[in-house]
Length: 266
Image (tube, rainbow, N blue to C red; front, side, top):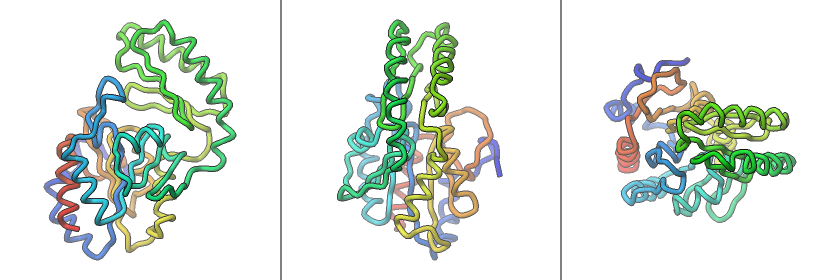
């Protein structure tokens, strides 16, 4: 059931009660990266993980399963975090890998690579004269970032994107915070990636409590997938909107504190 972001229960103050209610269940944790583990910044390369957050993740991963589910490319998010004990899902879950090189990517994603290659070439050509527009190619996704684009140019950026998207019906357009993306048009998203990992971990049962923490619209698919079986926690950004999450944290520092409390309890 959807709630408005302002109506969500505060996860930090609810932690003692949450913990007492979940003692009999195995906890596993899924995390978004940008806007959740790091603040939203002007360029993806600047979203560097704080040493304190890295320490908390390392401690948590020594006690339970932890996965980072990101829109970033798999190799990129794995490099940004730098912990080999975690699972990583890049391109919103199309490309997944775990400790020791175990792979769990979506096999059918490969047939969409030619369209992504072609769309990338067109994007780089058509956005070449738009100052501040960043084209980011991932293995199974193509992102157009316009956070640094002048406000008067935003409408043109979005118009161009829609025109390109119509040329590739095999790709699906998605939206995030100041970003538009093209991904394979199949039934797959962050929520499906979470369910796939739960299955791989033999954790898709009532004795497991999955927790997902994220801040963006793409994380709503994961909140929805875990509705009734897990805990969705939204990192609020001040925007009032409907959400499928049931609790909230207010910023990256609160995320780190929540994860630290969880690691200590485990």
